[in-house]
Image (cartoon, rainbow, N blue to C red):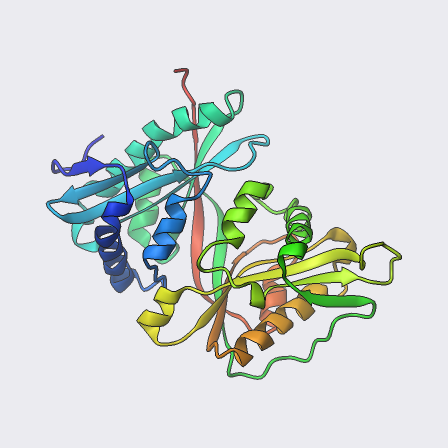
Amino acid sequence: MGTDEPFEQRPIGAEQFDAWLALLAAVEAEDHEDDHLGPDDLAEYLADPYCDFARGSVAFYDGSTMVGYGYLKARTEADPVHQMYYLGAVHPAYRGRGVGAALLAWAERAAPPLHRERYPDRPLTLYSSSLARNARASELYAAHGYTPARWFHGMTRDLTAPLPDIPAPPGIELRGFTAERSEDARMVRNEAFRDHWGSTESSEQGWAHMTSGPAFRPGLGFVAYDVEDGAADGGTPLGMVLAEEYAAHTEATGERDMYISLVGTRRAGRKRGIASALLVRALAEAREAGFATASLGVDADSPTGALGLYEHVGFTVKDSWIAQLKPLRAAAA
């Protein structure tokens, strides 16, 4: 399936960052998702070990204007299904001209061979998302066989508002994230998210990529340890919180926002107030460092009650997204 017009198509590379950023700025001006990215963020995308931009990305051009883009990201597991991410957008001035449909058609062609290289014996599903208030996007996905599967909320908090007083529970110490504690945090993350919808393990390679990226802020991350369980080496890790800061957001808005990328508690540490204490500690550190707001994303139906936890410490829902799924048959090569 093609567009209504013969737009040029090419894989995305670093030489296209200016055009890509211009497209993203146009999308933000129209959709108001409060999503601002810079060249360093795009470079991090290209370096993702689970993406293959040479074969798993495409940009549509009208002259020098990038009018739409899409790329694929593999998952670390396929148990039992490989839910491969598709991420993309269409320039507002070019919507309604078949670009979105052509991007989805491209993704459905490009995904199977990339999938077969990683999980040849597993079924494949494409996993994308649409802004809940964007009815046209939902209609596009529905018209191409995608099914709404889950709702996620984007939440925000004003850091000038008072923070609740939630100290660490007895026997729990909150320690700053360091390289030495990174593997403890990854272990906590993997166990904490094992019962979450659509989640897969964070591999050593993927974790290293995330914690070395330009947005990662180790000084705003913490790991919670149980120091009364008799474990060697300073206690047992039970919870963690990690955060990021996007320089392009600060430049665009004039305010610093701490994006909380991960919060998790192992089963043995749940219902003890560990996650709340971690969050408040991170929020306090961010406020002290001059951040104006904090933001995060959450599964609306999280099995751990995360939505209620975030509301308890002062976050409110700003926007919602719909997870869109379409099973594909990964045809033989």
